[in-house]
Length: 138
Image (cartoon, rainbow, N blue to C red; front, side, top):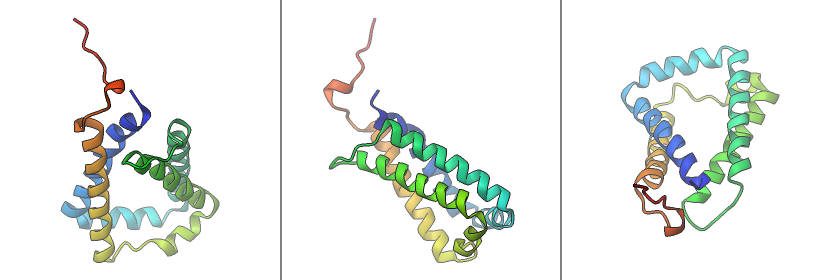
C-alpha cells in the first residue's frame, strides 16, 4: 500500500475524532490544555513525539504532488516544525496557547475535522489508481 494511503488511514480518523471531541467536549479539552501548558515536561515530551511522528512521515512520504497527497507531506512538515519548537523552547509554548478563546477552539475543531475527514475519505473510500489496488486472492 502506498505510504499516502496508510498515513491517511491512520491520521485521518485521529484528526477527525479530535475535531469532534473539541466541538462536543470543549470544557474538557480546555482543562486538558491548561493542565498541559502548566507542565514544561509534558510540552517537551509531546514535542519529542510530534518531532518523531513528523520525521517518520517525511521519511516515508517526502514528495509533493498536485493532489491530496501533498496534505500528508505538509502534515509531516508541520509536525516536525512544531516538535522542534516544543523541544527547543517548551517554556515558550505557554505564550502561544490560546486555550480560553472560543473562536480559536472552533477554528481548530473545524480544521481538524475537515483535514481528518479528507484524509479518512481518501485513505478508506476514494478510488485508488489501478496500479495500487490489491487483488483478491481466492
